[in-house]
Image (cartoon, rainbow, N blue to C red; front, side, top):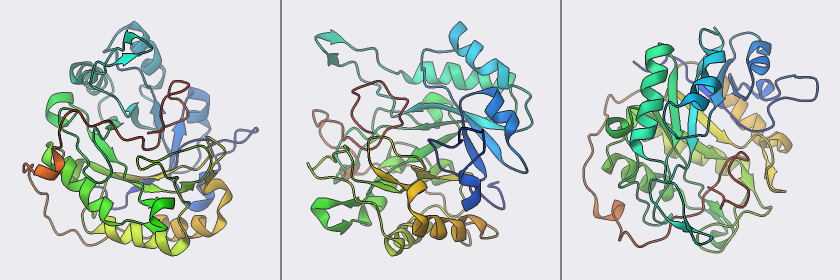
Length: 304
């Protein structure tokens, strides 16, 4: 069963120089964690989502990364990967190592076995475009044993002079088509714009207005009414972009959203099974869309 009140997560730059957790002032109850000290510092009911970012299976490095957090009462779970790529592709003349579903499965299984109750989470890569998104041949609960999947359409863009809310619909249906049920989806809301990020249509992302943010939240409610948690991307700026930390009007919108009691909306008890959709399965040769990535991605990696 989903929680009666979802947790809320806004990653990047979560702590100031004194170790104070900053997004809490806007009602975000889950922190972006990269050290045991940060996790131990969390007060009240705030939980921690620990960044891992390896996808090499449950090897020694993985175990050393994860083990210090096991048994900590503030632990929510582990963010295994952001935009993992299952393909083997040439990078600088060399064949890049792919992130295989089996490696994620080994990591997720190890966590479930050694840290019962901890959740595993990834944000899968869209292997097509924002107009015809596809998660085909990426990851789902069956092939990866990952618990939760962040779905991250970023609909507000300069070439649109606003926001394409139908993009949310397309991403959700594409995820369902690849076997990710709505009960496993984590909505990812856009809260960044400008800076050095480019979208897949050679435009730039726009920081949503307060009203556009409300429209995004409303559109997501049509599909995922009671998620385990949701994500606002991003609290901190990454590439000279405007982000939530510097947008008090958006903080107010999300504060209202985050402090609302109960699920996002009354559940309709519908969790559609995966149904093949032509729009969700475009030709394999289409390039992966740059979406929006964490600052912890490799230097020079396209935003995802």
